[in-house]
Image (cartoon, rainbow, N blue to C red; front, top):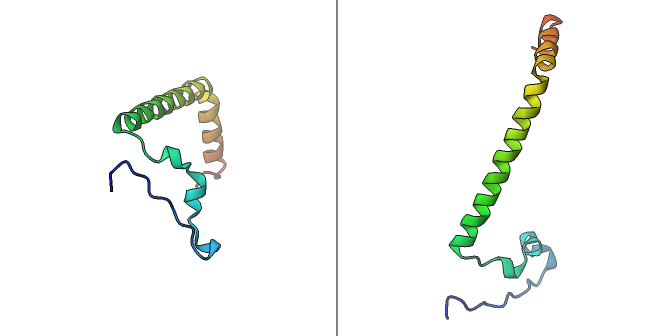
Length: 80
């Protein structure tokens, strides 16, 4: 059997035994070259860094009110 040959999948006799992951992943998306995986990883890492940076920027503008609320909660005995 050649490595690129796709073996047809047989359905289980009992439908309850079917793997739910098979329904979520399209068959054409199962085989990707390593370069495509690395590109996908790069895109996801860049999005993650952008999201974390955006969170830090938003928190920077609100840090005084965040600290004030944390201090009030601590003085009221709520932050234990």
